[in-house]
Length: 410
Figure 1: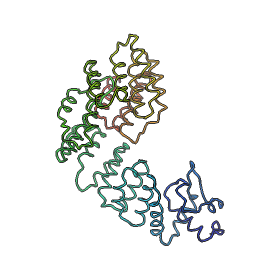
Figure 2: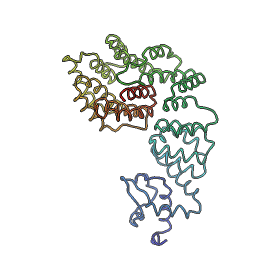
Figure 3: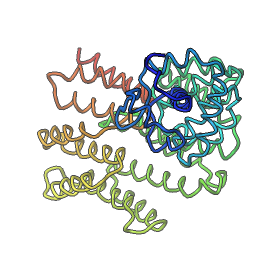
Figure 4: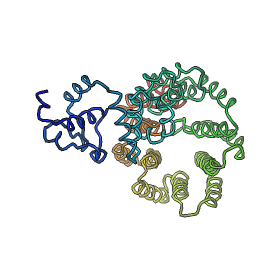
């Protein structure tokens, strides 16, 4: 009361409205609240350009509220007027604390609410405490936990579902290194899915199977090619067909390169160019990959290909694609130019990977693998870390293979 003595009733109302917010917010989202008197009274903090109430003041105000649900209902109404993806997260939070069943709202605004994975995970945990029977949200929370590499949290969510979600259980088993259990769960998931969903799951699994190996290993190409031959594009929804055709072509091109079959690789690239055009960035990347992987390591053409890949890496802005190209260059340089490979790897370390995505964690595991490959004195320590990261990236075969190398080295 001493601190707030000089605030008018309307200003106290603004303070309570802002105290209801679970985390700092953009000042531009506060047009409906007059924060100037609060700021002049030194009641606000401005972390990273955002605004929130001083924590002690905020916590005391929350304790003395007579009608907290009404405050959260008003906050939800205020956020509903703001056209912004982040606003949907805050609106869902306040709807829940206002006593509303926010399940449908969250499902309708999934993409906006999941945009920031840490905040989404916290929100879903809060909602599930308030709505323990919201099983669709529990499924969403489990999937998000798997994306974030939090297998123990995902397992707790999945165990609480009334019926097993075999597709998510397959991912959980892979993150725990249980390959047979993962394959059994995936088989159950596909057998109970629609034709379109089963085809999508199967194609995704083929792509993941090709990724689940160490860079210097061939992997089970026959199994992937056999799996791709079973994909019936007609089973997919119309909206999925084009992307599926492109993915299949990319996988076949990659297998051709790994088999050092330049003729097949060029043929696949040519067929794919008919769906796009020669100026498409994808076609350019595939051409660079052919030149780099299929040229003689001792020839001038290899040096030209490395230089071209460095330039492509330098002008690629999308993070996952940029790191993937950089790792391709590291692999090409590792044998003939280890110092160059180490320099490239050092540059890659400065690129912030999205570790709340399985693809980002897989690339991160590969960075640790190459650290161990290029620094033999510390190689085992780097590889131990890589094993853990391959598991969290749902790559149990790569983790198992690298574990075997570790044991052999010891």
